[in-house]
Length: 201
Image (cartoon, rainbow, N blue to C red; front, side, top):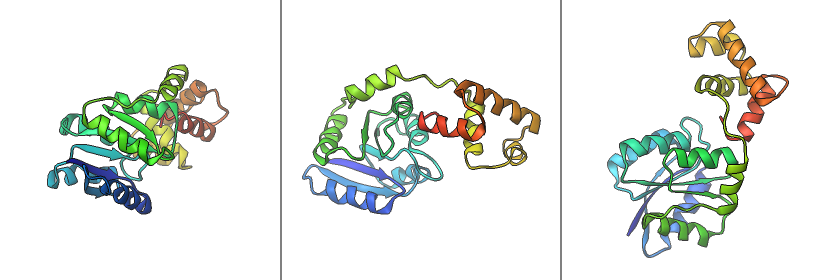
C-alpha cells in the first residue's frame, strides 16, 4: 500500500485529490494538510511514503517544505503538484529534493502513474518542462534579494520591509535596486512580478 500525505491550501482540491487517490487499490491517503507548516506534525502522527505538495501555500510553500523533508524525513518522497507551470519552480523543486513535478491539469491517470513510479524510486520528469527549465534564465537573485522582493510584492513600504528584515531603509533600497537591475524592470513591483512569474520568489 502506497501511503500518501497531501498538502494543498485549497480545500476542494485537497478533498478531490484524496477521493481520487483512495479509489486505487494500492494507494491510501493517510493525512491532509492545509499548509506546508502542518506537514512535519502530520508525518509525526502518520507514516507516509509520498508527500504530494502544492507549491503556493500561504504560510510555508511546497518548495520550502520539500527542502525541510529532505533533511527531516528523507524516507518520504516528494511529488510537487502545482497550478503554476514555471521553469523556476521546476528547477527549485528538484534542487529541494523532489522526486517528481506535475501540473494540476495533468490527467488523473498521469498523476497515479507518477505516484507509483516515485514510490518505486523513479524520478518523474516531463522532458518538455525539463528543457524549458534548462533554457530559462537561472535565478540571479541572492537570498536576501528574494526575501525583500517577496515582501515588496505585497506592496509593503520600504520602511516596513526594513523593519521586518532588520535592515536599514538604505540597505533595503540597495537590495531592491539590485533586484530591479537583475530583472531588467522599471520598479520594485515589476521586479517582484517578473521574479514570481519566473518562479524565483
